[in-house]
Length: 431
Image 1: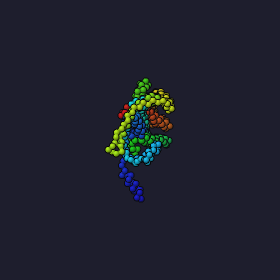
Image 2 (image 1 turned 90 degrees about the vertical axis):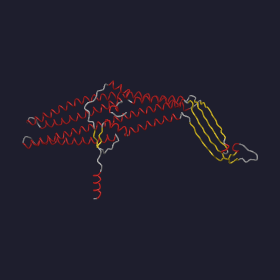
Image 3 (image 1 turned 135 degrees about the vertical axis):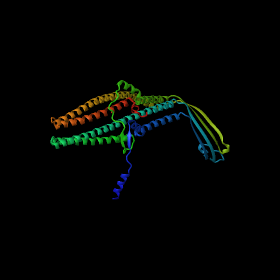
Image 4 (image 1 turned 120 degrees about the horizontal axis):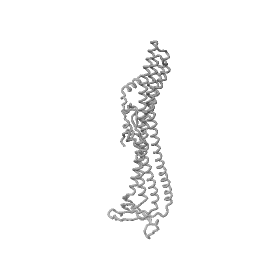
């Protein structure tokens, strides 16, 4: 008895779910800030930046300091010495030793090319992040359209329920007055049941779309969701040539492919540069003695010219770098073709969706007129219940087709802007 009462109390005192009023811009910005895909893309870019920094630090002077104090004994016989009258082991004796060592690469073409390659890799990762952000924006826009469509379906089917409730009442009133038949009442009740079933399906679809959108933007899925933008009824027209030109400058995938190709070319140059001489400078300083008051300073400064004569791995690395460069060139060419295909396909989809909207709007007008005529004919005693039933089905289907066409048009419009690379600018999200 105690547990049910406790659960009832907790349910009654639980804080109500917050209603999230969400525009498309807000949804995209939330996804870019809190979404998993965006976070992973930023981590990838940070790794590329760290790799570039590491390559740069390898070109800078390196220095080490070491201080030692140790007790040592030496066996002279180990080195082939034998002093008459002296034991072979000398010591133990104390040594104080402080050392400093520094090295600097004056000229190393391979290391320079590697650093330049990492810089191109960092640029490519920046473009990859932009592409990922565009993908996130397009995905969120599609989910937003799904919720808009579900909202429109719920509103439409709610209106259907109200309409068929009125028609059912009219059929019952006519039957009671003796001007209608039991068949009219049965058919009206069937239509009402269908409309209520359709409303339940629409509400379930909306809940699924709501959960998907909240998950994509990193919001609490128990919150209620209210979209501030209805499903658009029109879309802007965009010529293919203008869209292709915009994609050539706006798609980050193309710039990433170009940067990857430059990176691969620099990696090949770095592999070839290992055949070139390199120049470095080394410095070693040592202050040592038996006691702290007899420490003496010694040093060594050396300039080193290294000329590789035979390195078995150089040729292998060059061959591997050539393959990587060829792959980068192939990917860049394929990326250009893919971008053009995306643009042409998305514009074709938008044009088809726009045509469907025009046809669906006309179908709605015809279906509404047909329903009015069939009801007037039935009331005048000339029409049949079957005629009204069919008109009602056509009316409901016409509205469903119009909602679907408008949703497809909105989704196709977002796909066009994703194909041209300006999806974030279009939806108003901060680049």
